[in-house]
Length: 168
Image 1 (tube, rainbow, N blue to C red):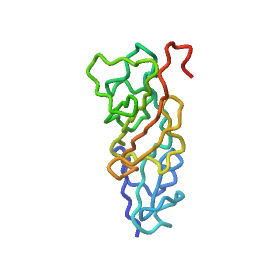
Image 2 (spheres, rainbow, N blue to C red):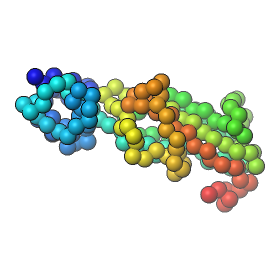
Image 3 (tube, rainbow, N blue to C red):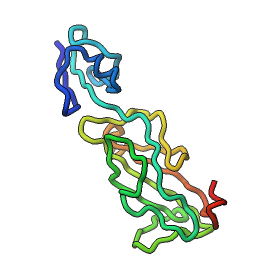
């Protein structure tokens, strides 16, 4: 017997699950990702959900005298279906505590760590096909041990330059 659990709040149980998957949704049967099928040919626990496959986000690049992104709203190009829940900066490999007056300093190194959590009915693909911050490949780790629910992206942005023209 087919037991469909549709994680998408706006959709109802469907007999033709392939219609949802064809529109960008993913499907699992008993926890294993599978090709689309119909309830008539699938036995088990079926989930239909939207999957985020790519995360290519942006924050202010380190430029001497400029401010870093301090607020969650200052993370740009966040994929639909997820929310930024944490933003942590490191200066010279030490946590950089934001106080409103922080500015990048030439010669210092900067790393940023951004956590994204999937909205209800959405999951992150495991693994993501692309994960970048400011076009640099990010190290991806699971948020609270569940990579489908959330991911933390970390990128070393390198040494702060003196001028915008020096930024790679």
